[in-house]
Length: 118
Image (cartoon, rainbow, N blue to C red; front, top):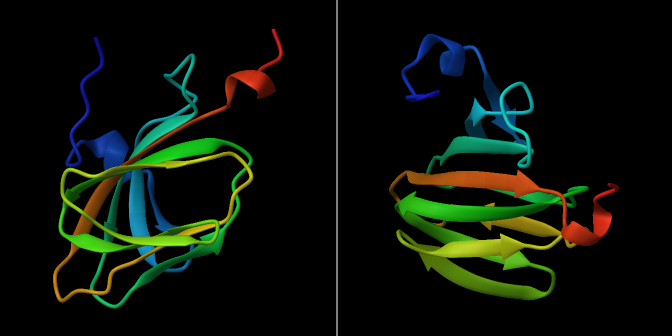
């Protein structure tokens, strides 16, 4: 069994800047996972933006605390704690913290089934 906490030593060694706006850390990545690319904890401070980008995999952003403006393709929607947003493979997306409170979210990433080579 592997249990990770955002305060764990190995997790603290995995912090990085997320698309010029947020900070994130890999709770689990390809060193441990077999079917998922990564599972990360991220923070977006007020006024900051996860810049629009396209990933070579699909993701889910799950808002744990706070809120922000999510853009996926041409659609925008305010998201808040409890909301999960699917980010399809190859579609531009961004998250803006347009509030005065921190936005905390987790990100799970994996390859779409039609992209997996068996």
